[in-house]
Picture 1 (cartoon, rainbow, N blue to C red):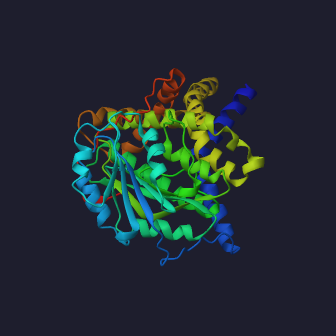
Picture 2: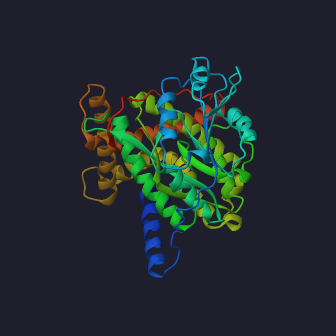
Picture 3: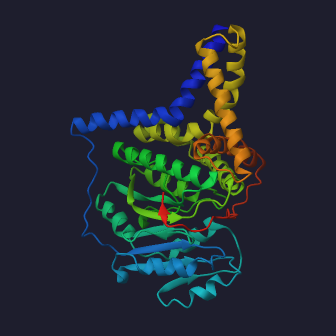
Length: 402
């Protein structure tokens, strides 16, 4: 019995640490460092304006490309220093033809569809600017995004800069939209603290940049290109910094089914990344970066979801031993878990009936996130997750930014 209790408390601690404890610890460390006058973030130089390539790997993006090109042309950065490079391999909806109407856009196109990574590997051979900025074809960038990104590269220690992903939101958001928006707000804060401590642990594919000289080709079957590219830059001794003033904005997934599709792919890619970046688990070699990587990413993609699955039956056994309706810590924790999963189930039930209560979106989205890890792990083991992105359907555009 005592050994079961020990397992229970260890499992509960790891779960708490993965989702909240690491953030609390980061906050405390940052506060102490600031009090000691250490670790002040590099301010950058607003007059630093190197030539950049705005790189978009696009597949069948004709519905978004005019808005994307117009948005890119209107960014607050000298346009003679910006090269728009689109790689449209495999697109058969007229995307390359429509892009050719824009004189200042460089297009690389091959009929065969070999996946985003193959397109990026091919396109990077044509990049000649010192900094390359990656962005998705269906996202718009904040007006000062390029300026805010490149100024951090003035620090020679910085090898990669990640922008912020923002989600259009509205008062009547579906669970997918509200949950995704709240999740990214929390992630954004963690990234700020990660960057201040040492380095962000992975960039957001919607908007990130690297020094072109640090690029290395990525395996063609890679699922999370942004994560692998940015972490390998960090493994070379450079840091990944984060600037939320540089942001990409897109619509949330149209519904939970579409969001689950997206999360499953990310989870499969997460497992793949942990395997391929296993040397980064060596805290003696990578120090703070390893600590951040394990705390912020590895636990969420591996051990924590498994412990969540085991925690409820273990808690049930311990509560049964003490009597379900007696007031003990194991009983309280058991009924708290029951209430949480009941709230997630109720959120699913109401969402399917178009009845939306935001208070239920957090447990519902949390459940979806962890369910996707198990489904993604299954896909990784079977090897049937295609490298070709199957885009999740997105909701309609709104004006309020989350």
